[in-house]
View 1 (cartoon, rainbow, N blue to C red):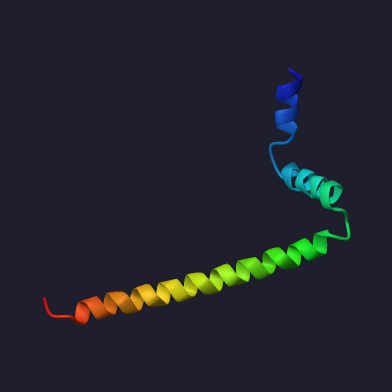
View 2: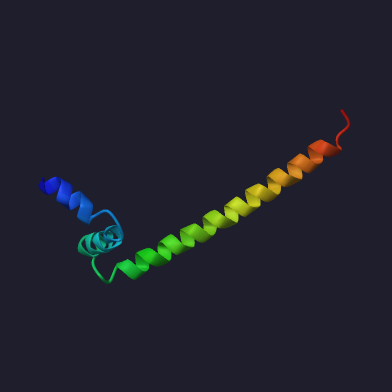
Length: 69
């Protein structure tokens, strides 16, 4: 019964609050901004890589279309 009530309580946006509290307990309040910057930079690099891969794939497809069969 307690497990069901707990599941209903943690069903929505409460997860965000719980994750933030756990992160602060694990890493400390001073480390959180540094971690956020690191994740932001990693996401930016991932997006750059994704754009570059899409461009190379598009160029490869165009090159394949130009070659006679």
